[in-house]
Amino acid sequence: MRSSIASALQRFRPGIAPTLVVLVLLPLMVGLGFWQLSRGHEKQLLVDRYAERRAAEPVSSAQLNDMADPAFRRVHLRGQLDGEHSVLLDNRMRDGKAGVELLQPFHDQASGLWLLLNRGWLPWPDRRIAPAFTTPEQTLNLDAWVYVAPGETFQLHADPASTQWPRLLTALHPAALWGELGRSGFAYELRAEAGPGTYETSWPVVAMGPEKHLAYAVQWFAMAVALLALYLYLGWHNKKEKPHGSGHESTQHI
Image (cartoon, rainbow, N blue to C red; front, side):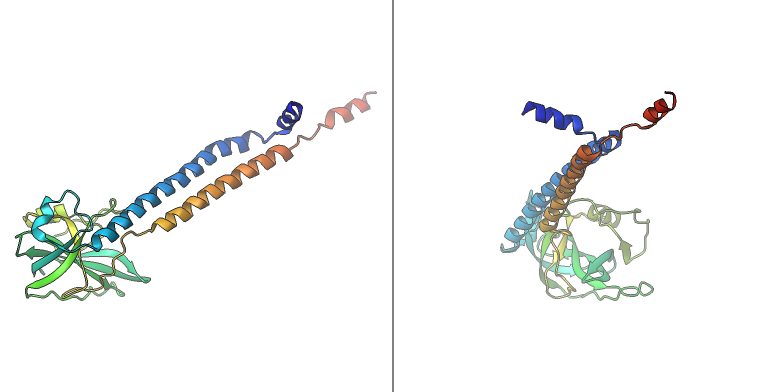
């Protein structure tokens, strides 16, 4: 038994270059697989918490600032929109169509709190023409829910500084907006439910669902197994050729 193992090990000659490649890529692939599993677990917890809180009754806006974890809480609002300071959140796709999300400051009467209300998605097929929207002037009664982003939005370039309104942005920072307007406002975005003054409000909770992370994890583990199998195959079939030059040369000198 030991001799057969020793013999197999002696015949295992994968070469230096394949060994170095495997030493680098195999831990990387396995690590990425476990990272995808971890991300999928985090997303599943996020989706479960969203479903639980979205099923609850709306709380009053006065309770928001006292909540340690307001994410996904439904809130009942009554107040007016500030149509003079609209934000258009760019690069938002729906069903393969390009568009923007419309956000406006909302002054809640019950709490006196300023909130950044996302009124929904608007199509923007022709970027030469600004997206068309209207702002209700009357007092609105509506329900919304608190959106807390799972991480920072990826940006190739930071949004350029501007003083114009409506303002086109690729990432939202409510605290910076309230500071610019000189108002004390809520720290997170609120996404409106379907109702008066809203547009398309079918919000995805996460951009990539937990099932996709699981699929990517399986792919990484499969590639790791394939790499290891290829390495073992090369190691046992990469036999060194015996040198023929020296033998041929010796026969010439006999």
